[in-house]
Amino acid sequence: MGYEIREKRYEQALKYLKDIQAGNVTPDIPTLTGPKGEEDYHNPVRYGSAEKNNYIW
Image (cartoon, rainbow, N blue to C red):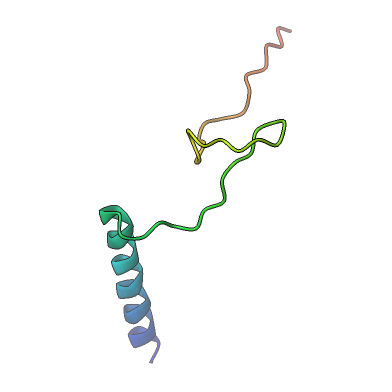
């Protein structure tokens, strides 16, 4: 019984990801807001690391 459910969910996930790749579906991901509360329309999904610290010890 568990195998059939997992197989069905796997197939649904693949179909959803292929639709996203094709541009048919837009995932509902929250956008980032700027430090003053403004929305970043030019880059709605931000990536990277934390700010570099310049501690010289």
